[in-house]
Amino acid sequence: AQTVTQSQPEMSVQEAETVTLSCTYDTSESDYYLFWYKQPPSRQMILVIRQEAYKQQNATENRFSVNFQKAAKSFSLKISDSQLGDAAMYFCAYRGSGGSNYKLTFGKGTLLTVNP
Amino acid sequence: EAGVAQSPRYKIIEKRQSVAFWCNPISGHATLYWYQQILGQGPKLLIQFQNNGVVDDSQLPKDRFSAERLKGVDSTLKIQPAKLEDSAVYLCASSRLAGSYNEQFFGPGTRLTVL
Image 1: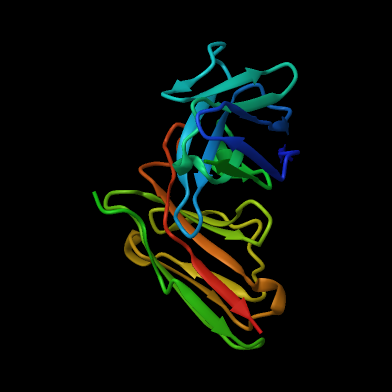
Image 2 (image 1 turned 30 degrees about the vertical axis):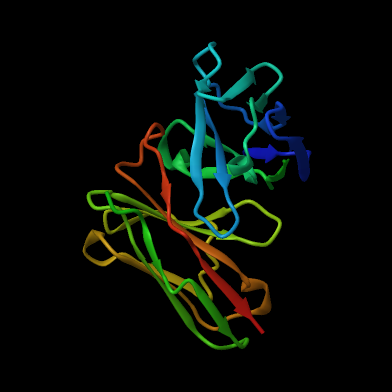
């Protein structure tokens, strides 16, 4: 079974600074997808960024980028120029590529605080 | 485009009582998911529907949990009887299809407290 591990329960960053959230995963599959979701307090979860395992190029979405290391099974999220609105719980998630593996497997999350 | 709707937003019940949650997915989304998110943990899939058929319910405690998706649109999740450990946020999500690249959109969740 796939597992996702987020080793940082909490992180903090100063506004306008850069922060990196860590995620490792375990799988025997060669083709899969990885995601970072953001869950603000009392608000719904939204997708921040996704990475296809077959792509070597790291995904980027504006201030958000990932460092995908397939051999190391590592998938970290970098937030540049942090803003107060980035404060939230961040979840790393894994999804397989076929059959009933379409379900998302989530890590326990990292609570990000942004200090003004 | 309207998002995923869920109701109620909050529910407090006593153990051994019954409770039901409702979810209305985004229009046209064929796939619907129910997740359980216990405090301090990431969401865990309970059940996945493709239209009105069940695709995956391997982690649904079937002795007390049930779910249906009549007509392939709205869905209800029921707990009967509830236990203390069922206290959690129940998230509903939907996607156009079940394919890996299809983004799942989440509702605001229902926070259940079992006393």
